Length: 291
Image (cartoon, rainbow, N blue to C red):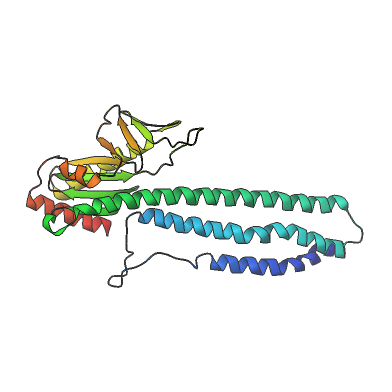
């Protein structure tokens, strides 16, 4: 029967299929999430969102790197089986198998390139958040206990990188990592111009970091007022580690800094004075939210 010539070659695909099933079963073998031994809640560190994204990016890289050879070999292996069972040779059919394998190779190559680029971007963002988080930790020391810093505070739709509570206000701190471009003679260009509604980097400009910081500060203002029952002074800070800031205009509700002296800058900002009762309410609310 003619249909057996197409069915029997599937036998040769069983080893590849079994290998693919093993790869899929092992994709979640690496899980870097650490849980507290006291309450089994996930422990959160600075840049935890980026850490989770990095884990997923490495899982995607593992899948594409391991499944790629299996999937691309499948048409060739099937074609070899067809050559054994076919009553006559159809070179057009073999050409199609070869073309399909070539297209699959190209597709997986593009996916691997995408994964490498994504991992590189996430690592840069993680490094920036860790640097800013480390700088903010300088606010916390025994003689200045009114200072509290929270990392990865979830909002209704997003995550705030850092929230710093001082005796003089609450500060939303967002960080963005951007690679500095090179000039034709090999020099790095590390100056970003701050305008009212955008950041002008060498060769491109962005609006979303300012919008995201402003949106996070507005959300936290409303949420804290709702939880504490009185207005709370909140200000947004956007940190760009590694960049020199050229302040051409002051964005509304947002201060753009490089992050190198962030702890001192936050300590010197005066939004208003928080009394002890309001301060304790803020800390309790944010502890509950960031848990």
